[in-house]
Image 1: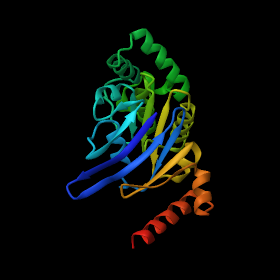
Image 2: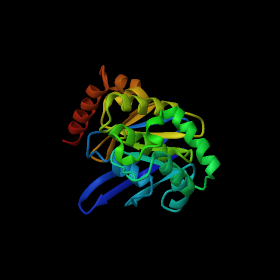
Image 3: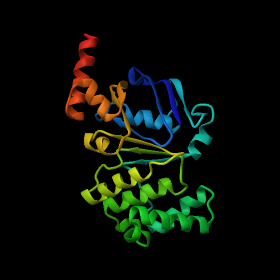
Length: 244
């Protein structure tokens, strides 16, 4: 469902991504793990056609992100930790508005809102203005807005950032409920426990390069470590030794 081939992105002398190649599959929750500044957000923004790669490309459901970015955008939903809302609109008004942008009728939009209400427990947010929301309430509407059109590919970039324990739990449960045929979830974070819980496979990225790609169990087995954090530092040390 996603085929990334030799993707690179540079800003002047800074190399944000270097020759990244991997594939992610239909029905999968695919984790991207790395510290802040590792290149995860650059990778996801490139896949979402918000950035143009310096070299390489990717196919999303067979569509080239550089040749037909508009078609790629139609199948995407994107959530990050800093997305805003219109403070004067209620949650329901926001979702209806974005549903209309994606071509849904009012009846279709209201049906979809009820589905998302059941999945995300939106009750307290639907008929209150966004200016009154807590951080967790805002993020629920941001997530619902991203999936109002039932996208084939959902990108979550540090989506749990700033959430309290209840909102974080709702997010992780929702992510796991999104695992289904015909859908791909890309879940990016620097929090090891989130990846361990939700991801079917994980790509570990550091300094714009791919260090490992496997299931969590496979990475632990390959590194001989008992936890993902220890495995991550083992891979960093191994890469440092190889480049000496």
